[in-house]
Image (tube, rainbow, N blue to C red; front, side, top):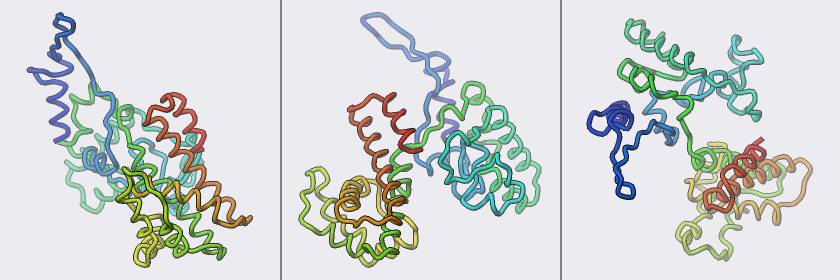
Length: 298
């Protein structure tokens, strides 16, 4: 569906953005507007469906970088022991190697050919898992028309809400802090439950969820957090929660040498969300925010 929609949007003989253009009246003058696809933005599941991408189920969980492997995969795979390969937890973006456009197309063609060759199903699934895609002849990435005008590695985008708040960086770092505090017997999830039940004044636009944040650490959800190794909540809840957690980590959590690394990483993750929100609300320019965000994430 995405393939057919983009073909209609770009190449339609009626109003294709790259063929006939879209007529507009600007100050009384007829003007034809032409355009190409600049950004394709969605969450991970949207990319998984649209790109026939395997996502976290693949050995290579990134659609943009060919040398990024799942956690602990480099240790398991002998051929991946080279310094060229990194795991998904790598913090230095300079070590990531992006697919070249030609190499990306060759990979797509290889999978299309393998699918057409009717090779054993187990072998085909092994290829899909190893390369991170399950591309077929009728898929988006195999479409020759779209290939001729779109560099897929340049247009694909992933939204910050899912990257940071929904099973993302901040939820993981918050749990590392809670987990470390529990192991050191400085605080527990039950303590957080009590902390969030205090008489906080919640902003009107978040009042419904803000009054229920304590449920994230009740008996049922505390076990879910421990099982997942992350704070299990929706992105809007995490957006309300992270400021309170930051206050708790600085004002309520005792100082301890072994806790310091987890606290520092959590606070830096909070700083990254602050930068994103400042850009979203127009309090800082996008360029300045990009520089600050890169530094904070590193």
